[in-house]
Image (cartoon, rainbow, N blue to C red; front, side):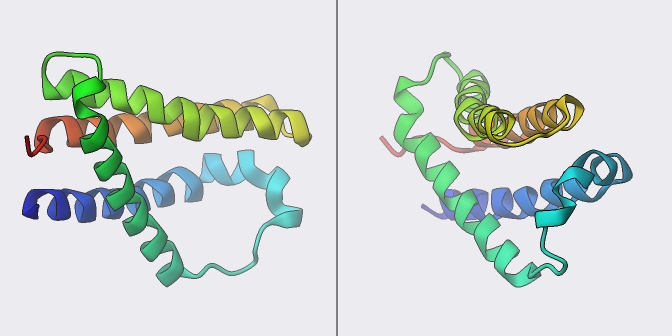
Length: 135
């Protein structure tokens, strides 16, 4: 249980750091200019931190629940498999929805898909290397 809590907190912190790096760099700011008319003008770092921590606990918990069902014989492969699944349902589906509903440049959507894959791989590898099922 202690390992789950520690890894969940670490992954929540990683979520926040990676989101900041992915969304606040000069390339992202240029690619995401299209969202400027609907974007907030101020951020709430405390709310963002709490949300990222909740994501960390949720993702680590789902990984443990699915562990036995994930492809791969070792944790690393299971973590990468988990990352692929989460990437599809979290990133790809959201990006496809944006493509269908909004006029967003394909470069911006591609950036979201690629950086989302990197983010999910980092977390999946962390989970696969460190989290083990209790059973």
